[in-house]
Every structure is written in structure tokens, then in C-alpha cells.
Length: 113
Image (cartoon, rainbow, N blue to C red; front, side):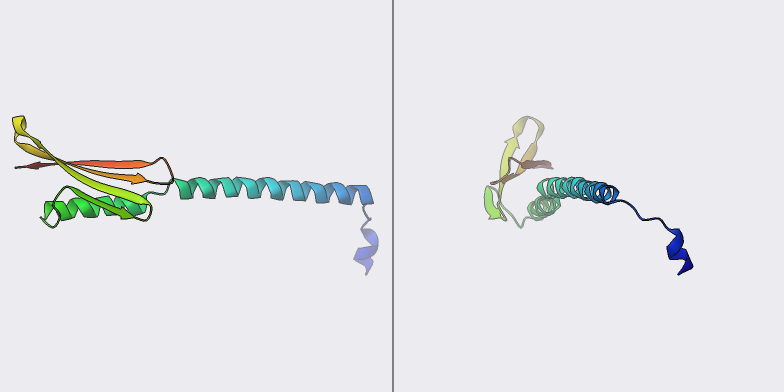
């Protein structure tokens, strides 16, 4: 009880200012966190990168024959084959386009004939 008697009380104005500062800091930090999370979700391409690598593997092991087209979780996947006669190669282009966002992932694979 002796400790409580030594602490001076604050005025109502000081308490209101401290409360407003706490609310403003909380609001700004929550807006920053929301922005970071939204940008991370919008730029997340790990799933489609895995799927493109899977299609490449399937092509290299003769499990996939171009032309190939498929829709996977709002992504349109296309595999196109182009023969390059002058250097005796085949160029395989794997393209993934997202329908909602303006995102395109492309991978080129060169295979000897």
C-alpha cells in the first residue's frame, strides 16, 4: 500500500493522448502488415513453378506430347513444340497464364532431335 501512495495520477488529457497514440500505432502497423501479406499472396508462384517443372519432366520422359493445354487453379498451361532445323534441336515452350492477374510464367527447354 505504501507504493500506491507514492505514484501520482495522470490527468484525463494525458490518458486520452496516450490512448490515441496507441490506437494510431496499432492502425498503421496493421495496415502495413495487411499490405505485405496481400503482396506476398499476389506474387506467389511456387505452385505453378512446380507444375511447369513437372510438365518439363513429363515431356523429357515421353509422358507428354505437345501440343498440350490444360487449366489448373486459374492458370492456363500450354506446351508447344518448335523444330529448329538449322541447329538440329527442338524447342519446347511451357507457358502458364493466370486468368485473374496479369501474370505469365514461361520456360524454354531445348532438346536434341
